[in-house]
Image (cartoon, rainbow, N blue to C red; front, side, top):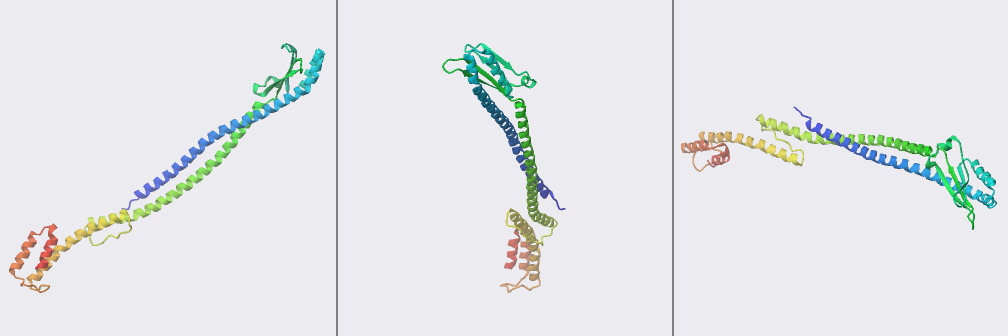
Length: 305
């Protein structure tokens, strides 16, 4: 019965190899996705925070520079009411959160802070404070200006989530590409395995059939060599094992045929002595002494007769 074990094994190996390649590509892409996803999210969040904080520093410096001359004049005149009015005017800017004016010894002259709800929910990352010294040759005091952007932290978190979502979407596309490439690779490997199995199976089946014929005693049909590899060596060895018993089977009839020629007095060729009783006895005794391994020597003896 014809067996498909070799073909099934080769196909299984090809499929497993294709699946292994696909799984390896997927794992490499997944590890790269995890690293890239975290790096892109952190980089986007830091970039937004850095840019907004630099903008707040620039805004606070501009406000302090614009207000410094008026505050210096009011401090020289010791007009604290004007100082309070000028400092309170800084809160009209939507980014200003708190204003403080200090004397050179650090005592407080004026302080104000927004009382809005969003001002109380600001985090440290969303606020920037700028200190500006008042007075040139003679120190007059210090202006502390705090600015902030409400929702900066939530905006950075939203940007991080959006960037990670984009990376996740790109990873999903890559996964489909990997699955498609893996299926194509698996199909190609399976096709190669099928063709290889077909090439290997045909001579093996012929070898099995020849071995079965030899086992049944049929030595007449020679085995045809179909390749030039190790299987060909096996085919030649099997054909030689078939040919040796066939030759052994041909020797006894040949011996009997030579003896019959001598008994009827019709030798195949002229002999130096006639075929008499002594020669027949010699033939019979030689035949009796001939073992299966001595067929060749017996045949030479008959030819000598």
